[in-house]
Amino acid sequence: APVRPHASAMRPKRKATPCASMCSSAFVNAHQDGGAGAAMVRNGTSDAWTKLAARVRGHGGVVHKGVHVGNDVDGVRGLVAVCDIAKGTTLFRIPRACAITAAEALSSKLGTDILAQANLIEAQRNSKAAAQENATRETTRAAPEQRNKEQPIPYNPSPLPYSPPLPVPYDPSSSQLPLGDIVLAAFLADDFDSDDANSPWSPYHAILEAESLDDAPAFWSHSERMALLTTGCGLINYYGETGEDRESGYKSHAFKHSKTLAEEIESAFELVVRAPLARARRRAQRLPLPDTVAIHRFKRFLAAVHSRSFHLEGGDTKVPYPVERACEGDKRKQALEREAAGGAMVPLLDCANHFRKPRESSWEVTRDDAAGTEFIVVTALKVFKKHEPVRIAYGARSNEELLTKYGFCVEDNSEPDGSSNDVVYFRDPWDLSNRQEDAIPLRIATKPAYTYAPFAKVLDLFRARARKGKETETETEKTAVDETKEDFLGNDFEDDDDDDDACAALMYGSGDDEDDDAVVNAHELEIEIAALSRMQAYFNTLVELFGKLVKRAESSSSPRAGTCVTYFKSQMRTYEFYASAALGAGYIMKHEDLHPVFLRKQDAARMPAWEAQLKKLIVPTDGVAELVSAYLRVRWTT
Image (cartoon, rainbow, N blue to C red; front, top):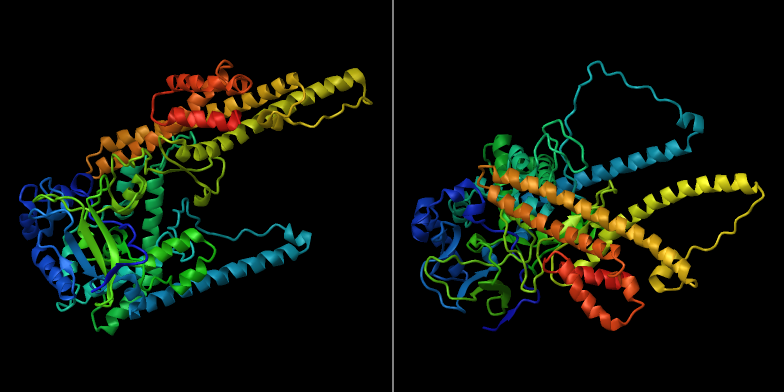
């Protein structure tokens, strides 16, 4: 039968089972020396695997007899080779019919009920926003005396001394929790609650029951997130203030992201899932579940979807209408929802762990015209020895994404060209809006093609602050000089203002007078040196903060501590890289014999010798000297 690759290949896996040394105690305490077969018998999943594999083969698929779920020789749970497997062997050929897709869940009775609930939430939000807008419009039209009239303070006979912050409410238009994931998790929870032994997914539930599914920080307890992802109480926080309460101290971005997601999960269950799930139980004539049990099960299946689902191109991947309308114009949110709407749980394959350097297996979605369906095909790219792990690649992801989505990190997270996959988002310290779209992605690389643009953008922020501070000082000095001049020359003295071409003279050499140009250069150089110094100091502060996070995590006895240490160290390396670049650039700018503005007027043949000297002066970190050289060339010698 003709088999052709699908027009769009399957996207990188969104998550699978993490490794033992970096995750929950369930993995750490797993069977260490019995191999895959012993682990499967111990966890009661051998029979479930056999049933799922038989179902795949019954639909024309392939599950290699040498691949099972269990523990490898290092005690890490995942897919394991139970015999030698040759390179080029087809490990899996799983038909789409054997996957549990978000499209199937969204079109179910439960799915349409949840969508209707989300639609109601969005309608109420829009109605409230319209009412507030009308009230604001009426207030604007009111007479000034009415607008400024002091409003009476409502009487509160028993004010609370402290009001805890409300959890983040679920909002379909802005939530980082996609509606497709919510519906798929609820669909799985409802199928699990059916207790139907004839359900085609009951063996899959047995495999999921053997997993902890709580490795991502959003599913940790709040106290554990505080202990591992913050500096704790009483330490100097990000803004240099001393914290007094237990919630003080510097909080990593992974903590903030996971805390928000955890709150949205609670809110989403209450607002859009609880009632539809209860109605589904009534339709099936099942007894109602206590809310604590219902939300616990929903969280477990949402954790499974969050960590183990694939994004399959093709099929029905249409974004649910309530969300499509709500997030109109927000490309990031639309992409998130589109990925979730095309999500699928792929039993058997979703037990594979991540490995990327080098890739050990490839996978794609192919269409078999004779069978009239699509297959997920996984092929071995190496020879797998008995008891070796069988792993796939989740894609190029930063350690922060690996931690917050999957609950593990990778120590060597770089590409063959030397560029790191660890992206640290730098946010303007003076912009309180803290919007994600305004964040500047920083990464380490040996080539300035990756590093120069973010370095220049961050430096622009510090240059603007340095220039603003300098202008304030100049304005103060100018006022004092003007007052002295007025006293000496009289009030009728008029000073002619010349156009200030400082920036143009510096960047393009358009100054007419050499002395004036030298003064302009000196002024701009002073601002540039101040900006580089502030930038270096700021990054060094971040390095110090993450050093505290590393020490705090290293002192913890939690089995998750190793993962957090790897995450913090990857962030530290990025900050150290850009601090070193700012230090090196500032050093060059302070020395006239090295300054490229002076070299610009000399023989260009000296440039290679100057670059060689530059590399000797910079801290010998791969890529730093190249970044500084690129900055000096672009900013000062072009």
